[in-house]
Length: 301
Ligand code: PSU
Ligand code: MN
Image (cartoon, rainbow, N blue to C red):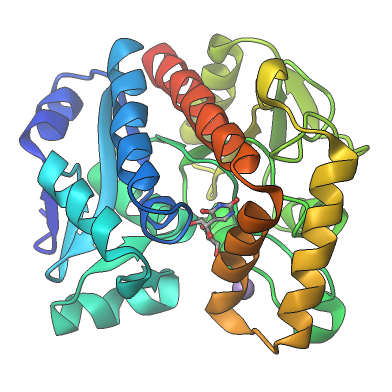
């Protein structure tokens, strides 16, 4: 038993009975979207997981407890707190627990806690990656190292072009993380279905993905798998428009000397402001789409 971990009873029961469970992150709630859309989205995404026949486990740290599965009230609390909650990556986790603090979990820490709880599939929007200019800033998200070491499948809509997508793929290759395109050979770029870059393999069904995860588990391979699921056609944005907004946000971050863990939340917020409501709508649609696919993969396992 892990003395630091609280598994929500519904999640514990599903895991004990071999029923599908999907992990969901909480930094997307606190730092990824504004209130109240963040809370509405988090609850709607849980509902999508349920409707697809799996149990959702939104992950966070509350009062120093690692939580796998939150109540409605806890999700509401994180959403209201917003950026006041500590954005928690691998380096922060033990400190927050020891201090009895609250923490919103990134992709990295959501993977860690999901793994501790025995959850094998996790859905989010976009992952962190290698930032543009990383050859001088060395800004590479801890999400990528976590994918290299922790055995959880992460379903995302690719990565935002706030990152250097080409370097992100290189990094994942070096660290042995397979990037699997769901029904596509092209790496999706979050708001758009295209990036001009190729994923490692195309997979067409949840069963195919489950088969890959089974072999990795049977062989005891360390590390996760990245499943990239393109944004639904109806929601995909004009690449010229979104890329102009991203270029502007990246330039502003540099001018203002934004560094460290503040970079990603700054860029996410600026892109949203520059594009108006459209990018938020697209964001919500793609997270739901990923949650449904993750639930189907969990069921296929
Ligand atoms: N990218 C997005 N939306 C997000 C994030 C990234 O499109 O909400 C969040 C995730 O929680 C991710 C984190 O794990 O930002 C990465 O932060 P950093 O780049 O500081 O590692
Ligand atoms: Mn960073």
